[in-house]
Amino acid sequence: MERMESDYHDRAGETGSLVVSACGFDSVPAELGLLFNSLQWVGPAVLNRVEAYVSLESRKRVVGNFATYESAVLGVANAKDLQAFRRSRPRRRPGPQIPGPSPSKGQTIEHQKKIGFGQ
Image 1 (cartoon, one colour):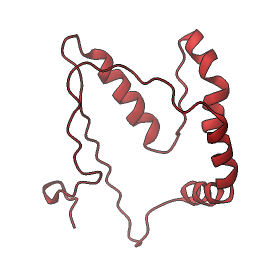
Image 2 (cartoon, one colour):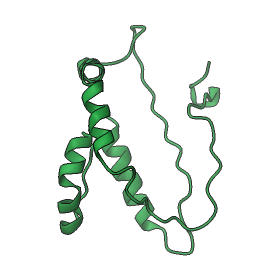
Image 3 (cartoon, rainbow, N blue to C red):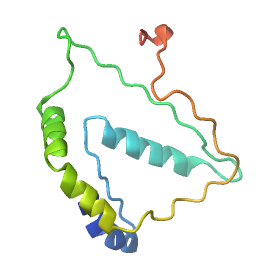
């Protein structure tokens, strides 16, 4: 995914296209939904935090699919190639300039019993 982003980033910028590098079952709707929502704000108001929830239900103990498994296996198998690729690239592209103070960082995974998502 990172190699494709690198290969097509400049061309996408020239054409106003969006390179979507993660195409999981929830990634595209979440990313495009967030992009659409963020474009609706009119300055000086800005979106500064998004909380997303995913609910998975299964009669089995493990919830996943073959694509998730395959991604993990290929990720481990190609870890050295990915590290070499990352070292060959510039450290960071400049990120978007977001006005206002940075939002506080909450928990990465929040357990909320009121929405059926608890420990």
